Length: 71
Length: 248
Image (tube, rainbow over all chains, first blue to last red; front, side):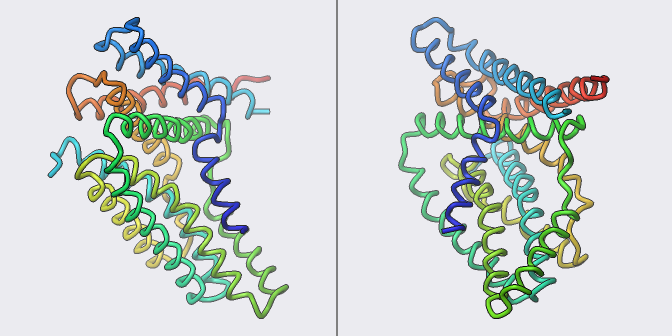
């Protein structure tokens, strides 16, 4: 049972070690999907918007982590 | 047969990501071997590897039955989330905002914990040590299995991904057996940084493919995306280093 609990915790840690970062990344991809579905985003531009959004999510995650982890 | 532009990043990603995880598992297996001898360490490791190989053998063909766009989007989202987590942590470690992972310290902690356990439960000590090795290989190997399945989740790519992971196991084990010490000289954070960029690059590429809006340039754009995340990570590490160094 201990091994199973540790396995569950490991899998949760893989995808939600930083829950806000994971949520931001999923929301970025979700917004791109909605924009594409509603024809608000041209398909040719979507990959670049998606990559830019993920870089922005990373930047926010790093900036948020740097001062917090310093203390 | 996948071409070089497709197979090389997959083998590279699986190799590097697996190497990081195998180094961490090896530290604990070595501690088990030092405290209780090679038998429980070998048995625990072999049992976990068999279970992980079974997981790949069962889940790999199952994934092939899922519709390709849905699979690409699901794997793309999971890889992006997983890779971003690694990349962010590596950036913060490179900036000094988080402590670096220290294999030698982990080895010392594991050795003394196993020794205490052996003193308290003399008769079951080998069993407990074997379970410790099993657990370490299973937990670190779970990430390897995910990476192999995720980066190999297109027709014909599971074998190159598994090959990269197997090569990493062989290289790390050979190095570990040769020096019989934790592999603390390996630049683990630099590897994690590179792997985070690779996995995030793959994740964004497959998310876009899954959404039906692929990047121009086909599989070559994976390399451009990996370069983008490496550059972004390096720039953010520099920025974070300045923030950390600034007096509060």
